[in-house]
Image 1: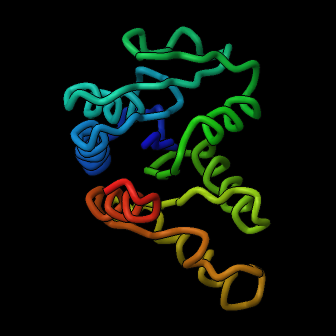
Image 2 (image 1 turned 180 degrees about the horizontal axis):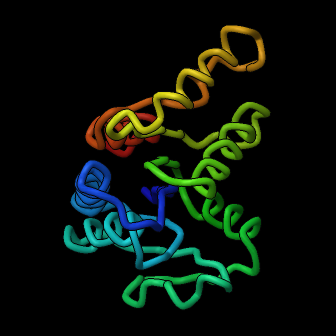
Length: 179
């Protein structure tokens, strides 16, 4: 399975690095491929290190203005023209999406994939990993949108909220019938 992971390129503390590394190890040990933003910095580096250490494959989709931070030992590295093309390639090259802690770029990626699912234009499973309660506020907002009629599709059909990487990967494998 090719798993797209949206997450931060920033250097963060252990509350976020440990779960990101563990999730990368799960991807690699499961024989899966990480499809990610391709940067060798921050959480992006941490998750890729976990995948690589566990024998998994790395497919990076970077963008021209971030080329200098692209991971050199990726099995494959694609350089997109801009962020819009990068998001499209990340989604096209993956079977599932997992959102880890991140900033505005990650939030943009997460909301775009949920918008596509809402309209039936994206059918791949999506997991939002709420590491250290990072997405508590977003989860509450999405639940409110559902309760007040802003979502025409039940939230449970759009995204799984997971606390741990094991739960996230088990959901993806069950959804895609890979285990």
